[in-house]
Length: 279
Image (cartoon, rainbow, N blue to C red):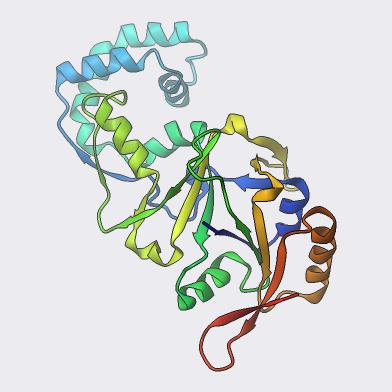
């Protein structure tokens, strides 16, 4: 299946380096990513069991340090929990119903997941105009068409996004290690609001350990996922793309991607639609 990755900039650099910029979940433009509907009730007994499990994890240590700077080591954490066990259990049990879904993003997914977003090549013609506007610098950018190996699950997998009216139900009362939570978290990665249905999105999901970390011109560090050149099938430019950019891309494709088709979007003669002509 042909999938398009749209670019407002850096399409050329992406092909030069064979690297796709991979995002954290919290950096995506939908604030509802991984938000859930909380279910279940938390008893004192469950809270004690949950605390016993969580205290051994790096995630619990990181959260504890965030809320209490005096905790420098895991020994500090053990001493703190031992001295405050009863209040921690009581507060967790009583505050369960107010548990914020946003915490799940920062505490789990951003440390373990990286995502690259694509759209189907068969989106509706009117929706395609919106995607160019939203993700390709108002039709001044480009899109690269990829075909990934069928059935691949390592070191990445490609999943289709499912659009729904309501969020996934998540019962955290049995702890983050329960089978229900594991299944729900996997499902949440590929569920979005119906508001985004026009994108017909697919996601490449991988781990930071399979990415290349690079420093950007802004001074920030970002992760990039390496791809094989044979996965690239076409490059399309928007109706507003400058001729100089097209020429530069044409030169690169001749040398490094000789079998990749280069096209430019043009206006349909009568409809609100785009057509594509070879360059």
